[in-house]
Image (cartoon, rainbow, N blue to C red; front, side, top):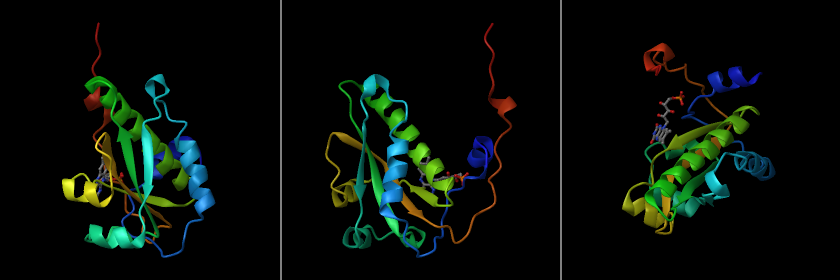
Length: 161
Ligand SMILES: Cc1cc2nc3c(=O)[nH]c(=O)nc-3n(C[C@H](O)[C@H](O)[C@H](O)COP(=O)(O)O)c2cc1C
């Protein structure tokens, strides 16, 4: 699959098979994800792997589609608001790199914004000086949804003289 096909075929997966994804392989994708652009080499991302005890407490409605692996992705605050925003942008690039690396090897991800509330931040032990960008559920897809149509990009283009 070439890069364009990879990007276009990726889906947010909501139902996973129970089969474990090898931890070494996940770390390999995380290392690839860490090649994301990041201003001044802040490398603002941190990963918290979520074990079964904590997962139960999160009480997610679909139990994250029964994905075998779950982790939270955090983005460190910068010294200024602008730096923090840049760090969030870099961490979003990190997440999408991870999503695509996994997808290239047949593994899906479910990006969930659970955890953004105070209660879940506490459960996930997110330090105060971090944004929580979400929880990623990772596993082999049980079901791959149809693509959700996008607005033609022509509607999003502006040209300045
Ligand atoms: C920051 C962020 C938070 C998201 N949170 C959720 C979520 O809480 N629940 C959910 O079902 N999908 C969540 N998604 C996934 C989007 O719903 C999904 O990407 C979108 O519907 C398009 O589907 P696709 O990724 O399969 O093309 C999130 C995506 C992003 C970027």
